[in-house]
Each structure stands twice: as structure tokens, then as C-alpha cells.
Image (cartoon, rainbow, N blue to C red; front, side):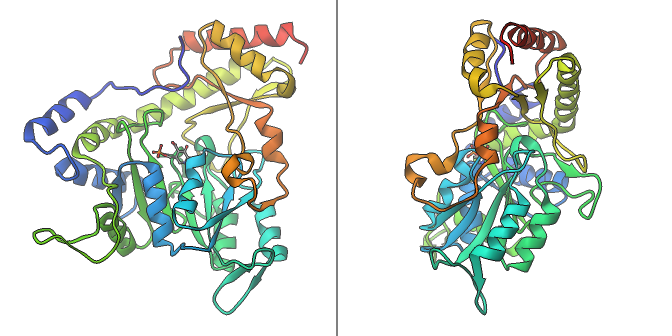
Amino acid sequence: MIPLSVPHICGNEIDYVTDAIKTGWVSGAGSYITRFEQDIGKYVKTEEAAAMQSGTAAIHIALLLAGVGCGDEVIVPALTFIAAVNPVRYCGAEPVFMDCDSCLNMDVNKLESFLKYECKRTDKDLINKRSGRRIKAVIVVHVFGNMADMEGLKELAENYNLKLIEDATEAFGTYYNAGRYKGMFAGTIGDYGIYSFNGNKIITTGGGGVLTGRDIQKIKTGRYLAAQAKDDPLFYVHNKIGYNYRMTNLQAALGVAQLENIEKFISIKINNYHLYKKELKDTADMELLDGTVKARNNHWFYALFLKNGRQVRKEWIMKLKDWGIECRPLWKTIHTQRMYKNNQTYHIEKADYYLERVINIPCSTCLRADDIRYVSRRLKELASHCHL
Ligand SMILES: Cc1ncc(COP(=O)(O)O)c(C=O)c1O
């Protein structure tokens, strides 16, 4: 089986995890946690990074730090993994769903017209005219590692006094190489940034995440909230509701080793992306989607657009599985999920369009060139048999 995306354990992982076990520091404290936080901070050029149990936990903490509370609203993408949205509900707030652009990231033009025509400003708040609720923040996802339009998004967030939360769970290592934010990494441009180190991500800690942000003090508060908000470690005094969200030393040990190889992994992802492109280039009606040209995208996941995917994608996924190739469709859009059916949406068109036409194809960093040629050959075979 050629899997979709599996971890690549090829460095000091076993040594560091064994070392952590030998020291006895296996839980939510230990030197690997500090080291991991420092190494991440250094890599993405941010001063403070707080390691957590998951990207989902880090998004929840970011929303709390952004002041999102009961009865507020947060603008979110319709087309993404549901973990980007559920934390809004953890805070007692409601999501408003926004469409995507042709890179599958949030459509900045639609966001702008929503803010302009569907909202009104009071002295300090932005109010959704339809619901009468305060809109507090926007969560933007850098889908599959492709940089969202942060220039446009940040300008809108600033103009409308919204907190901008970057779900960079899929985009660790992506950065701008041109434009206003040249040199800045996904996750470090908005108010808060989140990375995930789940097993399918570009580097893994088994499960884990990191919260970063522009306000150092806020990220320190985030770390404190994630560690049960303990004010006095001897007498167990707590002055806030805390969470058991801290990353363990074992996870961090794995992460420190993985991070040593991040640039190697990204260059493999990029090379494999170009190899797929080359192999599939003459195939009509099928192409890998590109991200923005202004960024060095990490190319975490490869999104293959099938012009007539609406008719064939299910059948192709099954057929590819029979041939030992794991592929998957995009996520069922979140506003159509049972829990969010009554939430507000804003002109969602492209999300539905791409959902029906895109599949993800194998992208692990341990893929060999022969695997890519085999997958491409099978894809071409499917394309030639069924008229796209
Ligand atoms: C877009 C998005 N948001 C949030 C998450 C949640 O991260 P985690 O699995 O670390 O909780 C993921 C990945 O799993 C994701 O892809």
C-alpha cells in the first residue's frame, strides 16, 4: 500500500525519546519541552512558542486569548478540517462560514464584502447585522500548506478591529518570499498562529501543537492556561479555569528530533510535487493545484483537481485503493455538518465546486520516485479509460 501521508522517522527520534524516558521526565514538564519551544521559535522567527497537546487545543487557547466568549461570532472557512472550527463552540461562540478561493484558502474578496455590507461598527465592536452578535475574530487556514492571502486578510482584520488567528497546522515551514511579509512564516503574521504535529503533518510529535503570537505576554498566558492555570505549585492555587493541554516531554523529544529534518522534508515535498507535475503534465483535465507564487509553500498535501471529478472521484478513489494507492476526497464542508447546519454562511460556491473535484494523492516524505511514477501511471490509466 502506498499510504497518503505517514511520518518519516529517520533521525535522532529514538535517541531523544529514550533519553527522555531515562530521565524520568515523561509528562508535562521537562527539558525537551523547553528545547522544542525554543527550536520552534527560532525556526519560525518568533519570540514565544507554547507547546500543547494538539493543534486543536492551541486553537482553543488562541480563541480564549483573543477574547472570544459566549455569544460572540468568529468567521471561519467552510472548507477545511473541522478541528479549525469546533474550538469556536468550545468558547460558547458561533462560527460564520466563508467561501474559499482557487487555492482553497479563505476568499478575501468575499470576506471584505461580508464585513462591508453585512456588518456594522459600533464604538468598539463589529456587529453582524443579521444576528446582532459581536464578531470577534477570523480564523484563516493555510490549506495544505499553501499561504493564504495574509496581506489582504491582515489589512481587513486591522480595519475592522478583528483578531486574526492563523491556523497554520498544515503549513509549518511555509513562508513569504516576496511582498509585504517577505521572510515571515505562516503562523507569525496574524495575532495568533497554530501548528499541529499530528502523525500526518510535515513533522510529528505523535500528537501535539504549538501556539505562537505577536504578543509575548499573551503566549505566556496561553502556556499557563494550558498547564491548569496553576498559580502556586505547592499549595495548588488557581485563579483561572485552566486546561490539561500541555505537551509532554516524550512528545517534545520526538519533536526536537523531527525538527532537525524540517528543511530536508520540505525539499522532498517540493521535489515530489514537481515530479508529480511532470508525470501528469500531458493528461487532459487533471492538474495539481498551485499555491500562491509569493511564498515558499511547504507542499504538505498535494491536491489533484479533476475537471469531471464530480462524476468520477468516488470511483477513482476506490479503484486506486484496489491498486494499493491511498487517496482521499476533501472534507465534507463544515456548514453542512449536522452541528453547524443552522449557522450563517456567506455565498459559498467555490468550496462546493472544489469539494466535488479535488482528491489528495500520496505525499509522504518517504515516497520514492518510483512510487510517484506508479501513482501517476495509474491516474493516467484512469483518465484514459473514462472520458473526463
Ligand atoms: C486545518 C486543521 N486545523 C486543525 C487541526 C487540528 O490539529 P490537531 O490534530 O493537532 O489537533 C488540523 C489537523 O489535524 C488541521 O488540518
